Image 1 (cartoon, rainbow, N blue to C red):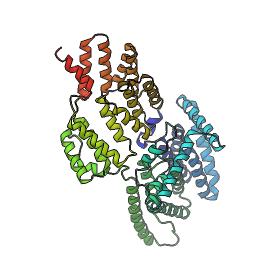
Image 2: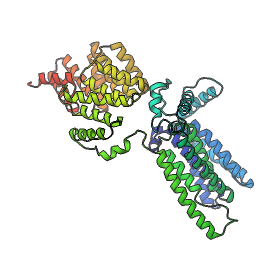
Image 3: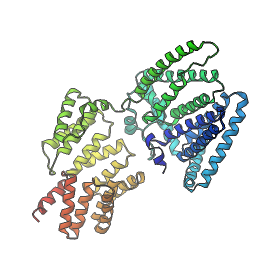
Image 4: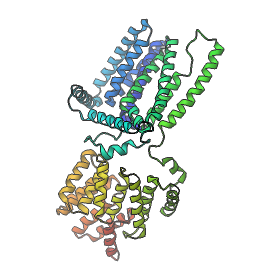
Length: 521
């Protein structure tokens, strides 16, 4: 259920930070509005958002929300501070009551309690995998910054360094430092970080001027406190790769800076001129900062759109990519795509010049970026179709570079049993994949092949039918079903499964060889 709440945001922490911003804005608007019905509406919105925030289980959002509330209270006029605290207590109590009475939130209460206990353990010096990983990633970001002080390592490079050299066994964590500031510092150095964060701080201070210049406009105060909490949350727990997060931050900073606040110093016309000029410069600066923050995280992504590869047949796509690598031979993404295109152009499960060209493209891609797991994984899938021992080497290397990705572990488990006949090793690797992602299809397929190797045909058929019901793209699942039918002598069903496997992927060598034998039947 929780995942459905933050689908647009990609990450529950960024969604929780936005909820805190909206809650503080609602409280400020409810405090400052003189209309009773509107105050009731704002209070209801704040209460509802509090309940949703509870479901996100984001400890960072809870902490920064408290800091934002403190800022809101301190910035409010003296006579209104008690009013704000009383309003927050009433709305919070109502939201807590509805949350406790709702059975859906009972499981969330256990998660929040466990996370709170883990945070307490971490603060007192104990081990907490989640926070330990965050600290480890921040330390790595600082180390990269110390090695590339001026220009950083380049946007989008942090995950490669992390997966290649710095792994903590925390299977639930993404490969980012959970910090807008620290990742940006490592990837852009002083030349990128100082201008952007100087602009953010200046916009925040201009917004604070507006708060002091219009003390009774509590909506502005709530927006400023919410933006402060949101910015702090991004710095401690949200990465810039979640594209909605920086967009919301820059929008709020622009809103806070579009009006002058020194009403007693300037005439109305002077204020109008100052507002207009400040708004234009603010929007220009915010737009440039937004483009910098949302730059594609892999070099060459923007130019891929110019290639217009969508919907093309493999031959035309290979031609365009071949031209692209001639123009930009140092672009690893082009080489990786070219190898995958060559692999998709193969047919009949045979080797030849196209196979060699695909291998050469993958080799070139990983030579350019040896820390990238994707060329190894792509070649490993190609070699597995050909039942080549190279598949094990490629997939093992891909797993070393990205040890927390269940998909790679599933493919490696399948290669271990299909190519290497290592049933115990394949079962252990499949168990690792399933511990990360329950029901990972290729890990389940590997378990089915292990069952076939032990002669447990019924068990293998049950597993493979489950995989086939999940999706219709796993050619090894249908090939495995054909082996199950072959074991019981059902040639017609065996051929049917092989035909379907051929339609999905005509490059599985053993499946195509068996289909050619059965084709006269």
